[in-house]
Image 1 (cartoon, rainbow, N blue to C red):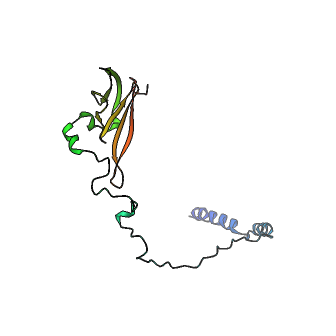
Image 2 (tube, rainbow, N blue to C red; image 1 turned 90 degrees about the vertical axis):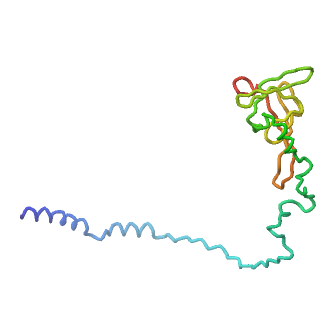
Image 3 (tube, one colour; image 1 turned 45 degrees about the vertical axis):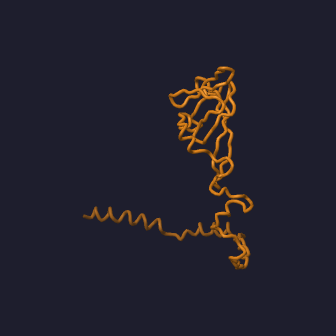
Length: 182
């Protein structure tokens, strides 16, 4: 029993011995090293006075008006979509295999010269088709304008954010058998 009390009191006595002495040496060192220091606090930036802005509805643009997106002087297509309006019905009638694929997925894998007319060999997935000037390619109403030994020039019709149709020129380049450009 006495032994248990002694084991309990020994750690308490050790803690009491460590806690004594006000750490005077530490306080003296801190006072010596901070003797000439002054805190440096930056001034706050000057606040500008609030200025109220009057919203005059009569003179400002209506942010919800559709004409805000396109300039006032530009004639609206009147639902026609502009000069390059594609013929949707003709595409349905043509039912061309190569118009069902995006132009980016088509590959030019060959070139032919038949009856004095250049032709390109185009691959779409596992299907292969021959195209000549005037044929249609891709989903954006693309039409072949020129065929050379190394490329096919295609003019596409794309719609801009205002609903107008514009023409864009794209190219299909001859691909080597390993998938890179030749």
